[in-house]
Length: 448
Length: 58
Image (cartoon, rainbow over all chains, first blue to last red; front, side, top):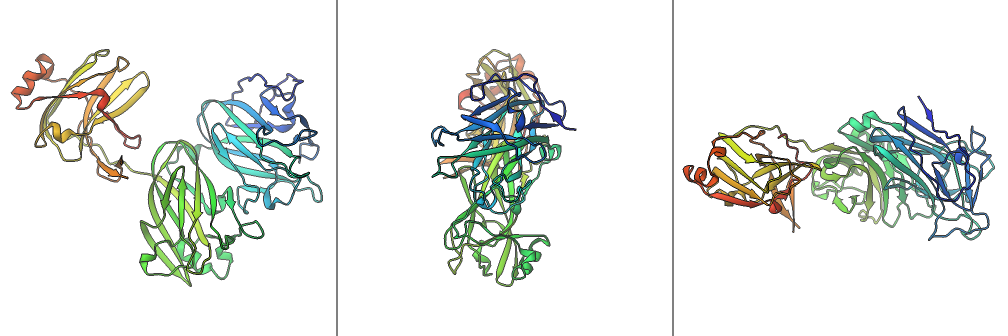
């Protein structure tokens, strides 16, 4: 059931900073119409020229921000932002209708970015064909084309902000800008929020850097391409996509991966074979996966390779870290194939949380004393069999919640590793209310 | 060099609960001597943080 957020008050000033009134969604869908920018005080619009847009499909009005007599400025970009509240944190599907960026053919409409809280979503101006951006209603022969965009986002419980920022002018030497917005809508996605596995399909890309002569990457379902269909069907019996317009320079494909939790995930990726040690030749270049400031060379853990024609399709696994919220994932081609071409086949990226084995009790006796507020605690243990990887773990509850800390040099404390253990923990902050003791066995490695 | 915990390794938590034993009735040093060990002093500030991907059920 849709909930429209409306406000009865009218606001005369458009460009000024406006007071924010919390708006709580009673349902799981929030829909905001651009045409209500005058009456809905949750809008903040930074532009000197704000008018209704009569071309908005269906609603007969939308939000229209344009340059008027003030040129676009890189240092003072115009924007429209909206503050709203939700009761439930989690992953929401964001849908909005705004400037249609496909092909960059509508030169009057400006490129723009969308930011939800601190997560920026950027559909590049020369975005390749994809399933996340489709024509909404195109009015043939006009400059008013709208695109409908779908992308998952993460919303916090409480206040959230969505911001549409105009990223450039499109005509009159880049001085003039135009931005249209019909509506945006958040729909709570219970499945995505509670599901442990996250899968992103190749066709769900939001951006790509495509230095080809026509400016557009070719996203080709390979099972509809007679040349490559055998390779695709061998890999998954499903559609696989070929990005083949990178020509003689590297490029990237960009995806949004939403995660309701922070932690380590197993990344399973099916795409061009990057592991030449298999002895099977590939006519595709190597590629990396970039997550935040971490670059992963795909192919270190190839689990299977499918060969057909001249193409090798692999499935590989890597361990990666995802943060809570949106993770921008870039598939980056930086090496050509043996013929100097930058070509990739890609099916999907699948993220599965790293499993934690079951807890087991293995000790004779454990004891301890701790008075909340004291800076000292005492613990004893008998009958422990400690291995090199054993860690003495403290479960600590304070005013910020529960954290876990461990002693890094336990074997030094216990000599030969078989324990009767007496530990005095000092320097405990006053904020600690409870400490529990355990022993865990996990592997800590040194890496560069 | 930075440390990381390999989440693929076997993980066991030997104790889930705090159990008060006889140690509360005597000094820690006496308990240690009776059990053939010595008291190990640990500074709270020197404890290492367990990464969030390692789950505990104290």
